[in-house]
Length: 237
Image (cartoon, rainbow, N blue to C red; front, side, top):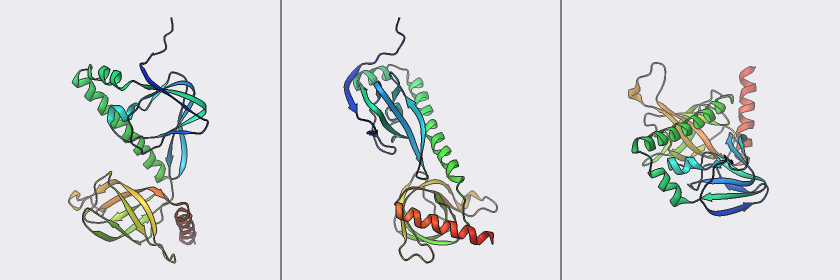
């Protein structure tokens, strides 16, 4: 008897070698099953690609977007010519809604927790990048106005912004970072990973927020890397 799972397939899609099925950070709640070929699941951390899993025939992916209603947590790419089945949405919703409300809630909690674990793992990897203790001027737009502030340390993956009014974790914004000796400010898309408010009253820790760089141009990344390398050499002398 064939023990492989069977699914109600609404449509089939064929992808060529190297073709992207969906990108990390994009919206989408289609759930796929591999009918033939192979799918690579990867995630980028500090511009570096990390392969999380290689999926084979009958393996399902994309379920986090359906269950949790969240952005894609990774990038899916075809390896070789690959055919995918899109699981019938009505069938999937019917099966999901037949679960008890408590069990559906547990699945949603697990999904959310898994997403946070991925983000924490990415943040930990980011922390492996050397942080340079430099006070640099920067600017960003908060909830209502344009803010000029400073950073106490910076790496190629993120920085700390000292402010009495930190933005909420998950908030995304455009940062303009001014490096000494560089004419134009670097423009970097960022996301708030954590926030520490003044009322938190943590001894020896100033209020502010930890920022992760989510998108930076190749040119700006090279300028930042070169600056940090020079700053590190200067600090060691």
